[in-house]
Picture 1 (cartoon, rainbow, N blue to C red):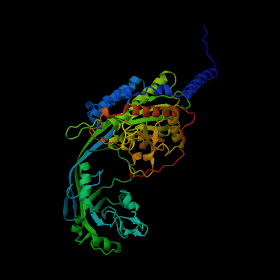
Picture 2: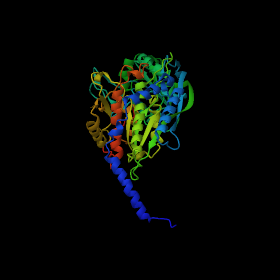
Picture 3: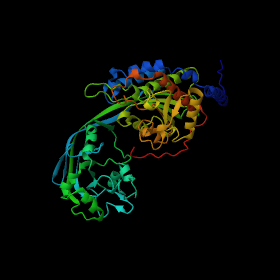
Picture 4: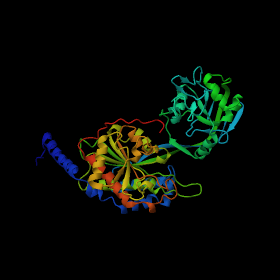
Amino acid sequence: MRSLLLPSFVFFSIVLHFEMKAQTLSHTASGEQWAGTITAEDLSRHLYVIASDSMQGRETGKEGQRMAADYLASQFQSLGLEPIKGSYFQDVPLKTSKLIGGVLKLGEQNLVFKNDFVPYPGIEVSDLAGEAVFVGYGIQDGEWDDYAGLEVRGKAVVMMSGEPGSEEKGYLLTGSSEKSRWSRNPSAKRNLADSLGAIAVVVVSPEFNTTRSRLVPWLSRERMRLDVEREGEGTDLATLIVPEDVLLAATGWKSMSAVKKKWPKRKLKGTDLGAMSLSLVRQDEKITATNVWGVLPGSDSLLREEIVVLTSHYDHVGVDEEGLIYNGADDDGSGTVSLLENAEAWMAAAKAGFGPRRTVMFMAFVGEEKGLLGSEWYADNPAYAIEQHVCDLNMDMVGRFDEAHKDDDRYVYLIGSDKLSSELHEISEAVNAEHVGISLDYTFNAPDDPNRFYYRSDHYNFAKNNIPVIFYFSGVHEDYHGPGDTPDKIRYPKMAEIGRLVFLTSWEIANRDDKLKVDRVNDFPSDR
């Protein structure tokens, strides 16, 4: 029998016809049918597992975190999401470090770690040595130059905190009661010292005792970071904080008031402070944690290379020294189970023949509580080229309500929706108005919001790469990072509404003809 072989152009035309028909169906469907599969009951069922005592607070690198990762991967697999690069896990290499002692020598003084000096959090060096030199306030600003005539390369610079002047009499650099950027930006002086070749910064603070009481609990904890060597934003220059009497003892100067009076006219003698050395004792360990990912490939051959990303973080803060488990039901068990429900809704649509035109990826990040580590690793090691990512819809703490909304919990804070793409913001508003109808609160989206939530969850590592984001958030409550953040306190109907809003927003973005336009410029400060 003669085989029926169609000419290639005929075959292509038939395939294109059916593909375009499928695209049209997917694009014209509203998505409401599958949004309705996101229910309070299913969210509760998942959360009572994720936030159970057996998960031990899901601390990054601990057994509870690994158990939670296995649960999420099993759910992705059972739903039918495809693994990425053959796995539902992306390994994230991490290094832990804990300071346990140390000595700072300045001239003839031996200063003991925690008692007489404290390092600025994040110090990486264990040992260093060199000459020390006093540099006033450590500022270069217009005509004011504390480094004038000084060679500081290869030396430790010793500087006063703050800047010349006072709120009562006015600050010299601003000519008003407002502080300059040298006080507002905690990294400005360090960055300058680093650029001039200093090996360390020693800050002389009149509020040393207050600073010490605030920092010591953090310094006693294990610190975690990505196990990778690279040049990053800002500086990791070793920075140490000491009380004022350390400087006076090293120089023989009578008082700090005299120092501040004489320094601007360079009438101080003995600004070379002699030898300085630092020796810190730390415990280091390398570990591997995992992001959990799965993907629903797009149905449109022209659009499937574009990736719509839905995210949450599944780690929390673990167990305290007294054995209390911090379940993290809201932070961020709520976002994690909402991610699962969104994945289920998308898979239900796909099985019914209404899969997304663009590819939709679901990611549960690890290490958010340790400094957005999992999402930082992904942004630097993405599954797809970073420019293929269309947007990130990130859910973090979407299950409770805050004091500002105690009388009506049908709301969500939206953060970042208008920062990079006006289209994303317009789509979000339109979807909510047509399908969900909850209150969209932009309080924390303000550029001058002191909480700086825009910089504090995993979407930030997408935004830094010019990828539009929306951060869905319901605010801080009395159980934030406390043992009372348990699943019985979650408002599941509220969480289901937010989950549907996320799904329907992703539905519109994944199925529209055009990729979201990035039409706004956002500046990202290095001192987030």
